[in-house]
Image (cartoon, rainbow, N blue to C red; front, side):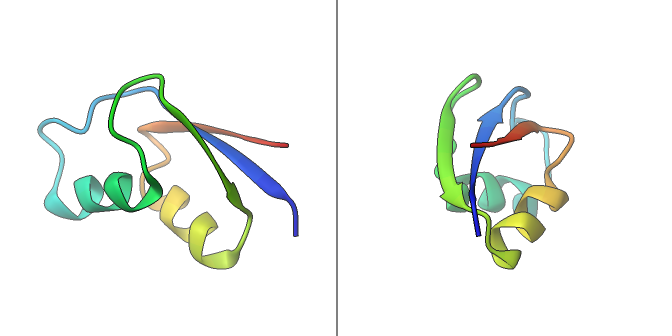
Length: 59
């Protein structure tokens, strides 16, 4: 299990409550903010739900 780097590239404004909560759960608050997480199935599923708002890369 590797690490994944997640960068928010679009705003959470005017998105559903579920998508906003997913951004918050990942630790993303601002555009261009980057966080690192372990690439677990739970994290990958969260990223898949908001893939249009973030960019990911393996570390």
